[in-house]
Length: 253
Image (cartoon, rainbow, N blue to C red; front, side, top):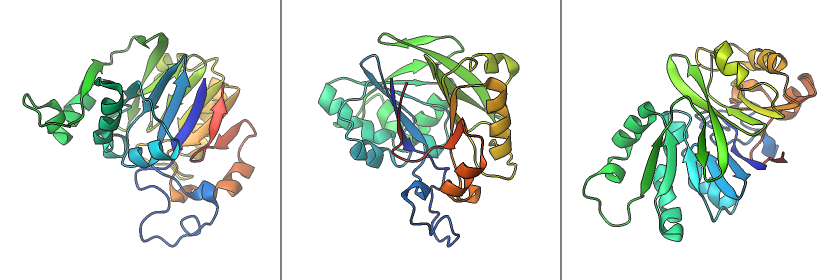
């Protein structure tokens, strides 16, 4: 399995428009963050988790010519706004895109992209085949995926486990039962917005504490704000089995 971090930033990205803090002015490429999304190549399948506003740019950067399915974590625009650009894959594959999401996410997509779901569609609109998530394992071709339920303040969100890899973004609370799904993982990718506590995201120390509890071999932090600090400085301060992810990072499991 190969993982590519398409984006590792929070909803505004980094740098933030109009900001002149040291992170936003940094010349280190690792301090430049598109909105959080991930590319997974596994068992011959190519999957993306979330299609944020930077989806097109991310697909072009990584030269992704084949996409089998999109998994959505939740309905916020920094995770859904790029959905229209799946139509390029419709044209190439001559089939609808398989999307996997909750009922809440589907309702939001129908509002934001009503033309995709209209009874009478104009030519060239994206085509999707909707697969609704519950709290049971599901398959994409021959790959088994375990959904993980959590809360983003009061909003239900989904993370995903594929084999020994776990991805969970935009989370502030997770139950003990759902944590069990994350045990014995080789790699956990986890939300970590900034140093200070936040209403709807884990802060740095909360992320570190949860990772210690779950004991993966390695963990990467994502959905990072400019308020976190400079990439290299923060990486030097956190436990050695935890790293800030950065855009374009590739790992193999």
